[in-house]
Image (tube, rainbow, N blue to C red; front, top):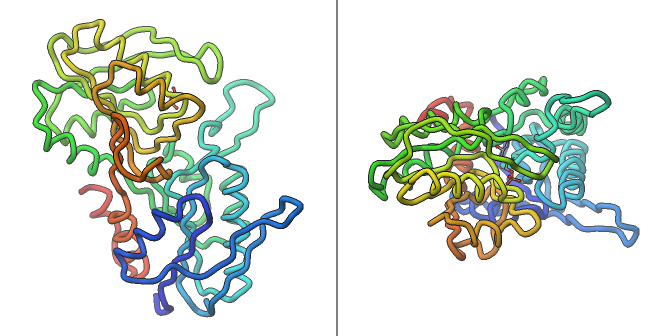
Length: 313
Ligand code: R5P
């Protein structure tokens, strides 16, 4: 790609955007990302982007609708300002939980969001650990889908935990947990859960050897914290020596931090795809940065280099 590399950010996670810029040795693009008095989002790009290869960093985390709108309007503004290419960098892709109809008369929200990003004018998308990999297929533009697994696995490998078992907290996460297990050399266990209501969790059954082992629950997101807290308790009840957890996206909705903090979990590791309170460690939640990985991916996209090495590291 010939144009200059420029990075812009909405208000969702400026700290991550700044960190990515620092790795790439570029300044964060100047833009007003504010609000009119009537509550509408106001965008103004304040530097020349004509012919540039532009990346917009904006996870669609809480407040989701607001951050999504900032992303869409940033993309539109950049297109109209003649950027040569616009990549939507969405480290956390919101609205991913409704990616299929489970009963009648429901939307497929993840598809609606994909349409909106495309129609706004994005040429490509760079994201991480989509809740359902099929969401990639909702786009007819290229999607580069990074994984936090290798970074999280490296952290746990360095801890040299005694007799580790990696636990998937639901059937949908088995592939992710198995890849993690292979990386750190552990056994695998699987929990079957059900949701009596959308934000409640009920552990039904568990498969795998737990007694005397150190359990690491691997999940893609922590929302209410119910899944983690209940899975951790069920693991201790089955004789786990200690229980750890890791998750790419720390949403921590509602009282999730308290729920996780009061659980039997020894430590919970998340990344900074979504901004975390102090940006560093707090309580028993440890935050690991994905900025170096995003910076490398952005550089490779800009230079038309392969990204596959990043997916399998
Ligand atoms: C479920 O499919 C996901 O992988 C997570 O386990 C879930 O979204 C976590 O939600 P919560 O923290 O509200 O239990």
